[in-house]
Image (tube, rainbow, N blue to C red; front, side, top):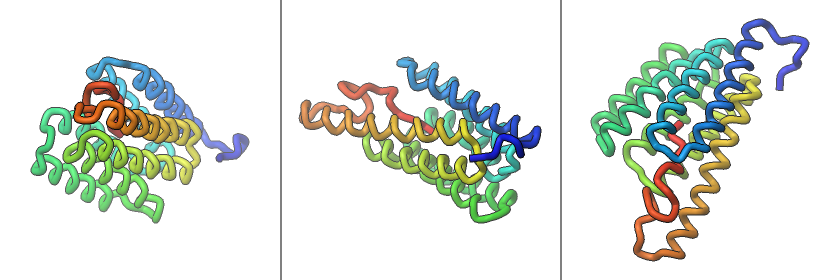
Length: 193
């Protein structure tokens, strides 16, 4: 984590927006309304993008802007492989244009996993992929020194693990019932980041 005495104004702004993203994520995951969750997650990603920009992590900033578009597109075009491929290509182009060093592989990995998860998967498989994406985002935040971003992604990762456990238990408890997107596990337990 960063030494507070050596923080520049840009680094302080990055830390601020990372903490804003954390606060919005906390409110988002407390929401039981899917539409409110979506709006809050978009807001959190705006804060994440600003955080990355202030830290000079341009690949992560660009890919986070694309995450915002992906959230909207994946909700509107559920299961569309064509739209998924467009988003994946956009991710690669954005990464190629902003790539600086090895750390940039982390947001590219996270964006790719998140895109595949949101367009092709549902239930436990989707949450496993989103959990891995959150882990990659968390490692990226650790690498750039963002306290709020690391905590937010850690929370998203843990939320996914808990939801996966709840869904697996519900599958055992209610064999034959659909617990992947509704029912005992609940529809809004996903973390689309």
